[in-house]
Structures are given as C-alpha cells and as structure tokens.
Length: 311
Image (cartoon, rainbow, N blue to C red; front, side):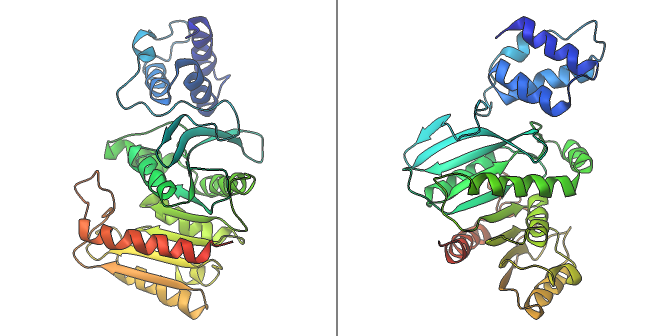
C-alpha cells in the first residue's frame, strides 16, 4: 500500500475534490479490497477534519469477508476461478465517462454465452448476490451484478433504508442499462439481447428496466415492487414475476393487477405467487428463506432465460 497516496485520497475526499464514488474506486485499488476502502470511508465520515486524516493501519488489514479486488481494466480479467469459470470485479464507463463497477461471473471457455444483469437487494452488492451470479455462471450464463451503491454494503436494516433513500432510481436504471451495453460489447456474450433479474429493491428495478429498455431480452422480478397497470402496458420484454403470498410489503392484489395488465397488453408474462412464502424467500442467508418456494423459483428462472435469450 502506498500510504502517502492513500493519505492524499483521504484529504481530497474530505475537502470535496473527490466524489464518494471515485474515492471508493481509488481507495479500493490502493488498499487491495472494497471492504478496506469502505472501512476507510467510514473513518473519513467519522473524522471530517481534513487536517487530521484517520489512522490507516486497521483499514489496510484484509477482512474475512472482503470482496474480490477491482480489476484495473474494462475487460473481465479473472480475480478468481472456479471449476466452471471465472469471477471478478470489473470496471466499465457510463455515458458520461464515469467509472462504474460490477461483479462478473463467467462460465468456462470463450465461446459466446447468453448474459444476464443481476440486480442487488437493498443490502448492496453482497456475497449473496455474488453467489446468485455464480449460480448463473454454473448454468452457462454470463452474469454481471452492477454495484449500484458504489462500494457500500450493509447488514443493518436502518442503514439499508438510508442507502435506498439516497439512491437515485432513474440513475440506477441508467447504470443497469449501461451494464447491459457492457455485456453486449463483450466477445464472450451471445446476442442479440440480454436479460435482467432483480431481488427486493432489485426486483423493482428489473421491472423499471423492462419499462425503460426497449431492447431487453427478458426480465425476472423476485418480490420487486410491481408496475402500475398503466406502466405494465408499456413493457415490451417478457416478464416473470415471483412473489410471496405473505409478503407484508407487497400486496398480492398489486401483483395480480400488474399480471393482468401485462396480459391485456399482449406481453408474454408469468406471475407466480407462493403460498406460505414472504418477502426475500429466495435469500438463503436470511431467516426469510423459504426452501420450497426457492426450489421451485430457480428452475422457473433458468427456463425463462433459456427460452428468451437463445441466440
């Protein structure tokens, strides 16, 4: 670690010369992990005096749950490899030239595979979402999970709620669309279209992407906020919606209204509501996990994407 360089980053961030996003990007590269960069960011916020930067020794230490280091290239250089492919944090540019980050999971081999954008829950780009991307890679898909919080990850509901409130949803959809563009630019991705899937907050964003992106191959929403009937009538991509009947935050009536509107508009769609399942039933790291519903939902999802993303 270049301690002088990191201290300069801290000062630049504290005096407003660096945005939060660019601070996290540069600090991640310098410290060797996004987790260490987040720890340093927390220290900066706790100690806003630019004349007295926080102590760096602890931030430089690797953490047990540290994510993969960010690639210094827009290509998907592997940060790790498994029996079925490679996994890495990657960088790519948005339309304004700003650097975006995401977790990319690829199957083995360079022959083109269908691709999917995986959208995070309100916790951020955590290990569960990375694991979902890895599962897709194991099934023969290229999967990109954009980091919509730009480095922030939490396990605390209050902090997650704050991160959601700070997130510009329209900008998040644009970042998802840029992730779609990034995938389509890669030689290892089979066209002509990319799919999108999201969970919780990400499920709502997947539906919003289906509303905004005219050239989307397919969308899958796990317990995402339903589109209004008027919005649903404007969707062009096939939509699979997977919901829990006892979800306290998403009334089944709203889900059914969206499903009916999709059908009336001639949109190929399927809505599945699981009795006895609540919100976040697919998240096997949470108490809300419902094994029966998850076991049914996963093959439905794979079948949906295989049907609609074939070249």
